[in-house]
Length: 305
Image (cartoon, rainbow, N blue to C red):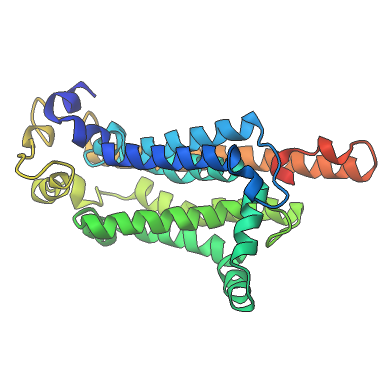
């Protein structure tokens, strides 16, 4: 990482505009769960654990979208894939765990109407969520699509926000932060998680088993320079020595870097989905015990309410 710090300034490395934006989101969250909480129907104190989840979500999203890791992801695809793990497989579920159920309910009630209910029943369908995220993720890693987006900063940003929205939809049905909204049974939730693991596999396999490097972003110096130019302030030269030569940032052969990227994504996806299956089983057992009279309503975890 020393090479990055030697060649790039504060703005390119740390993306302060994202830092400020996420700080504002964090401040609004704090105000909603403390001083403004009484404005929401059936609101209750938010547990410290949920607040920690939300802060960790902000940090994970910043690591994925704005830290030096984001810059490194423009040089090596294994770093790029690590960014995606932080943004879509760590930050997203933590956001859903950190936001109280009464806030979700208030938002739904605020915009509820016959029209919005019909629209949301389509958009929030588990089948739509399942294919939307995995389809967008796979399409993103088609070489032509990837290289095009990486050279079009506005389109790339819009696609990242679309992926984040799709990830929120996908994780909604896994985490079930508001069980009475678009519910799946616990058994179907487990099946849904397995289905997500299956659908993301072809994109990972394409990257892992390709016979040659797929992406011009990491192999063509002209394309790479175009991509890197978007990370730098206007007028600053792209340090081409980072692409090749003795001072190059890359420490793996391009195809090996690509294979590592696919392996990292598959392993981290399996880990996060495995943890989520454990979370679902814990909720399932809690509900079974509560129905048997072993627990009171107050014993049920907040995220399950």
